[in-house]
Image (tube, rainbow, N blue to C red):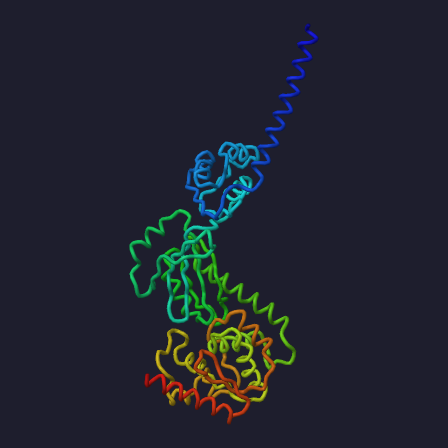
Length: 384
């Protein structure tokens, strides 16, 4: 009898063990396989939250099927105590394992609200943007010019968000003076910049920053990126260019940057200036004249006078030979690449063509015809 009882107990134990193993395997499969989420969501984890509260929110939003398994999985992998506050993008079909990793791995928020302080060629703009999880694109919800407009009341509400991300964006062609002046209006940064950075030394790019970051350290990062870009492109430059140094390349790139806003034109515009330098022809480019008048501190706001085209300044390429002494703006990597590997052409002239681009010419006679067409377009527009 006792032998029979022992045998039955052993059988029951084995059955229970098999069932337990099956439950564990089922739970692991549920934890690691694709989840029920049908469209991306921006998951906000409040400061002080925990896995219990988060699992309930995830279940309510349809992101997980079993809150208990979610919590057990986080505990089992020893990640429950690593929960981070912020806003995190969760993609459709994300498993519970992937969601736990997203909210515990650290780093900054991957979705939610972003403050983008954009420094453009003519003005700065503060933009508050929110990421649309389904399209992974930012939607602008607020914008204003910090120099000319008072910040809306709603701006302060956004500034109070714990997971607000900050970004500084420099447009191609901004001057160093503009960058320093505009950064003074970035009220989420700290510190001062004591020296004006050399013209051309700042990389037009997007910089993720945090509230309280130091302005001088940000400028140093901009300079480091520009130096790295120039070093990399200079090392691969075409042989035989009439550019004696990286500084000369940077100067010519800044002129190309100010002459055209069309990406595919940059190598052609660069070829015109390279051909002129090779043949000893003066560059005769208006942006350098304007920089000699304004020192990059403001747009000229009017046409160049004939007397200014004849005025002797170090930047007036109508009266000086070769390049001006410094860059006239901060060029982007595409313009630097264009002057170090320009298009192969015989062009010596270009003028606006009325479409936003330029008409190029090899001879003065052809150029004069292009200029006449442009003058006619200007006259027609003036009449309208």
